[in-house]
Image (cartoon, rainbow, N blue to C red; front, side, top):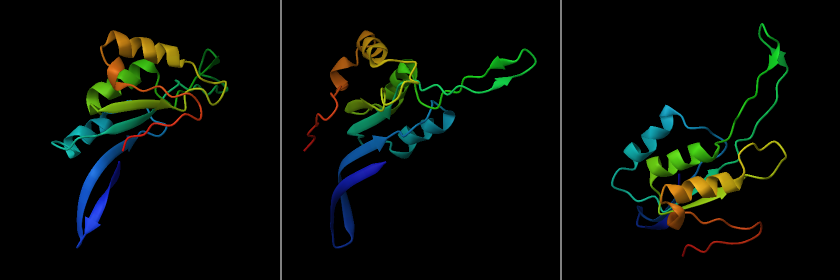
Amino acid sequence: MLELGQCTNMDFACGYRIYITGDTLMADELREIPKRYAGRKIDMMLVHLGGTTIPSPLVGRLMEPLTLMPTMDAEEGLQLIQLIQPDVTIPIHYDDYDVFASPLEDFRRIVEAAGFSGQVVILDRGEQYKFF
């Protein structure tokens, strides 16, 4: 969690709180975030999406490839919005490579269906979002 604010006489006043997910998946540990920040607004969430898939060697008795997914897909992104409840969510890191299995359009569609499209800002590459 990144907290931007000001400090005077050793007192810190948080003016803006940003959660940057990094490459992660929905896990029970993420449920600690709303508990830890209860009563404190999370202004923005930068959520790493794309459902990145990493192929592996053939494994197991049937010698089938095991596909690893280290980043959230559209469904998990929506679950995280519902859990964290930020004012604004900006999806990032969803098309950097050719190993993404969950395109941005999947996220856009599922967020709209759940009624969260007004809280999601989708930026084009190089575009800026001004939050001050």
